[in-house]
Image 1 (cartoon, rainbow, N blue to C red):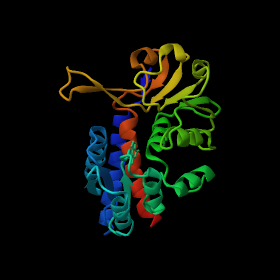
Image 2: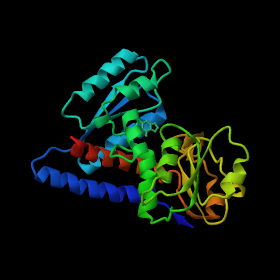
Image 3: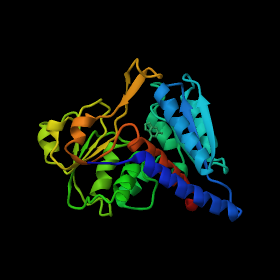
Image 4: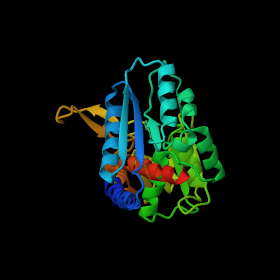
Length: 290
Ligand code: GUN
């Protein structure tokens, strides 16, 4: 079993990006500038956004964190987005999800200028992705492609099962794994809460990408020997032995599934850091799109 080390790989990518930033600056250009908008104080979201801002500092990007109160009106959030769209200083920005119930997530996604949409959530970017045109790819699926690529995992002709059909991971992931690209050319099955006989489907899979948000959902009896496992889940579970009061669990019962896997991502330290590295790569790409 080989661990797909997202932390190490993302650090390598960040070093590559840092070199590009030095190059840009030596040409008299400005550093890329990423802004992140967060609404409220959800612990997990705060952790992710802070990690994104810290990563920006590490590679020499400029970063701006926009923190809005949990009761911010939809109109005020949209007007902040408008401001970021029109701020020439900002190359790309994200609005951390989930948003509180009184805000329409679709309206927010549509309000972001597609040229600054480094999360790749705008329908224009998703449509361009479907057509194989240049676009911002959603950060988590793009990070998974990058990880599989850097570990030279053969995907062509393989059977890939994606569990979970969210707009930000499962659905785009299924499209990307089926494309005619180096990491791609899989026969993809997208499974979800209504799928029947899931175990039968996963037992046939060469590659399984789990993005369900249910701790330790995928067990050893559901996979075949030699499978490649990508675990997108990250659930906080109370644990008094930890200083934080919780531990992080993926969607995969790690020890027992790892024993049957050829490659597997850990949680934490697998997909999470790759999402951040992709966001940085997208922000660098945003400069070129200008
Ligand atoms: N919430 C969970 N994952 C993501 C992500 O990749 N981007 C944003 N903006 N919010 C998220």
